[in-house]
Length: 239
Image (tube, rainbow, N blue to C red; front, side):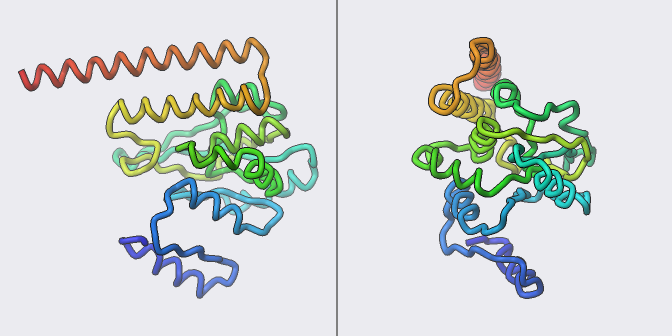
């Protein structure tokens, strides 16, 4: 149901490359349902993520990640460093340096380290996730964070410092917000998911729980302060 001929372009590539499988839809399914049906259609041993207009820049990216997973059965996922590209200013910023590897579920509860566009994971772990959390997934407006929380809760994760991908930052992407209120909604949802995992999937240490709660309430104060300042400015403009 694309209006910018994306579907036609994809069909052309599918005709040229037999390894491409299209999943056409006559209606707009929405981000999360589309994510679920795409995962369910995958039949490989591993799944790599590259969404929207992000792109990979390392031709050996997949090979390096798969080789690691093949040699380390106790690891369920590999992700890497990447760059943000700011379309408006035409500048780049390196992301994800000094990120831990191994068992870092609790660390991930506190701080997001994983660039989805760089991740490769074992498909069986995603299938386990859909079976375990399937009844909740459609109620979450974020697709990747709960998946990574689940995978980090049951397996080790490897970080490679190689810069393998570009994440475009512009006004049209899901995580760029037109208002502070929209950003606050996303912030609250990210913590609703964290709290769900802490209560229902894997309980963290008391120290980690306190740190997550501290970050949440500090964030609420900061966002509400920004919203208050926005309202004051609006009142000044209309007075």
